[in-house]
Image (cartoon, rainbow, N blue to C red):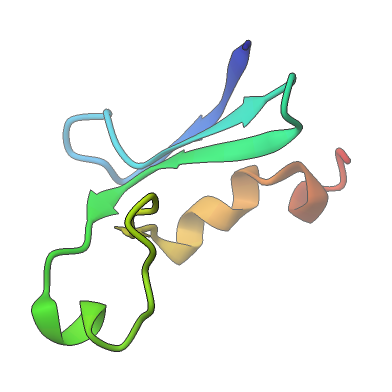
Length: 71
């Protein structure tokens, strides 16, 4: 698997997260973000055991190739 970093949150105080990656083998995106732990929010979703939920800022959408015309 080869992950390609597409962009980091320009407003991240430490410059580490959130981050968007592209997996060129699976042709999928891998998103690093803030872990959602609020029970009230999680109760509104049906999350299988093999999945997790992250929060990702809207400003990061700019790094998706389909949004910026690179697809």
